[in-house]
Length: 80
Image (tube, rainbow, N blue to C red; front, side, top):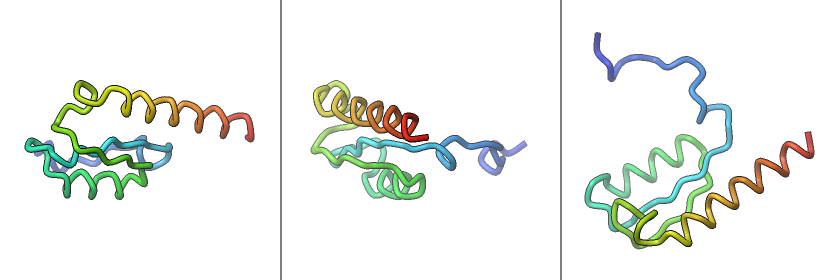
């Protein structure tokens, strides 16, 4: 079985809102690949001059993104 060719049923990012913190100074996952993935999932994206672990180098920004995501989800549930 080839793991990379498997189709996942019910992929969450296709039907649920997504947020993405893009690390422009990442040397592990190229920023262009991150942009591609974020765009593909329709994510609300925040870019930062961070390495691969923005949650360690820029925790305030990551926390802001999490809070924004939680607020957006709560607001959309109230409207529904």
